[in-house]
Length: 166
Image (cartoon, rainbow, N blue to C red; front, top):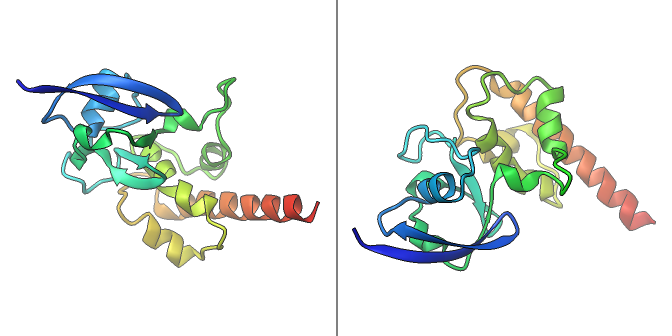
């Protein structure tokens, strides 16, 4: 087995992992980093349960080789909590809107929503649905998920407007 050391920033902290060169990023994050929010669903990039942000963009970590993460910034669901462990506004919105049932797909949906809620340009519901179309949910229904994303997007845009006005 050929191994390699991969050094990257995971949830704001630089880390190095000794990995099998054939490992996926999801294997490295779950197995080496112990991050349990990355779910193994389909392992072929179809369901989105393993979605993480790499340099700010959503990727299916099951089909992204761990060696490609060298020097990159990786953000997982665990990285959204504040230093005291409080959950983020998008996580709270998923709870408030009832967008969580079994929870298996939730981390991937939340990570896919980050570029949407951080965008300066508001997206309508059809665009939000297009942006999250790589994620599959089998029990909640997409309307509540879209409601949570839309609610958080609007809240953040309003907060930015108020901050700029002050």
